[in-house]
Length: 279
Image 1 (cartoon, helix red, strand yellow):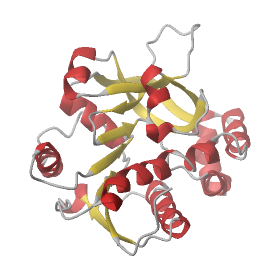
Image 2: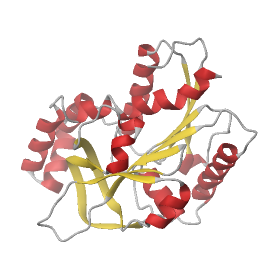
Image 3: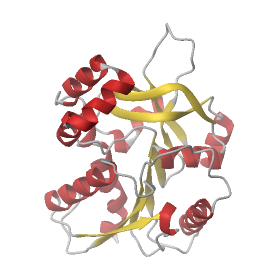
C-alpha cells in the first residue's frame, strides 16, 4: 500500500473516445477516486480530449492513463490527433530515458491505446478480427506475467471485459526485447479454432504498460448498463440472447470482473506512485 501523503498526485487521462458515449471514462474516474480515498492521498485529475481537440497533457503530471476508443487503430495514420498523441509519447519517453529527469513517469494504455502503441513500436501484427470479440473472457498469463507487479493478486487465468474488432497477433519478440518489454498475457486457449491467440497485455518498457482488454470495467455498472433496454437490444441483435445472458451472469461473479477491476489499475497506481513517495 502507498504510504499516506499530503502530496497531491497529478493524473492525466488521455481520452480517445472521440466524444462517443462510453463506460470506460466513468470507470477510470471511479478507480482513481476509490484509490485516493483508500490511500488517503488526494489526486488532481485532468482529462484531455485527444481526437476531437488535439489536446494532450504536458510533462507536469505524475502518471498517465490512455483510454480505449472506437474505430480502427490502422486508419488514423498521419492524422493530426495521432501526430499530437505520438509527440506526447516521444516527450514522455525522452523524460524517462534522461539521466537528469526525475521522478520517472509511468503510463498505462488501454485497448485502442494499446493497439496504437503495438503498431507504433511494431511489436506485432495489428489487424482486423474475423468477428467482434465481445463479452467476458479468460486471460492467460505468460511467464513474465507471473512476475509482473501490476498483476499481483490475480489468478491465472483471470477474467476481463473484451470489446474489440481488432487484435494484436504474431508478436515480434526481438523488438519487444529491444524495448526492454515482455508479453504478459494472451487470450483464452482455443485449440479447436485455427486462429493465433491475441496478445492481451504487454509491458512495453520499464515505465509503459498496456492491456488489449478493459481492466477498468466495473462489473456492477457494466451489468446495469447492459440491462438498459436499448443496450440489451443492441447486444442481443448483434451477438444473440445467450451472449447477453452469459455476460450479465459473469459480470456478477465476484471472482471474475470485479477481481480484475480491484487489482490491475489499483496496482498500477500503487507502483506508479512508489517512486514519488520515496523522494
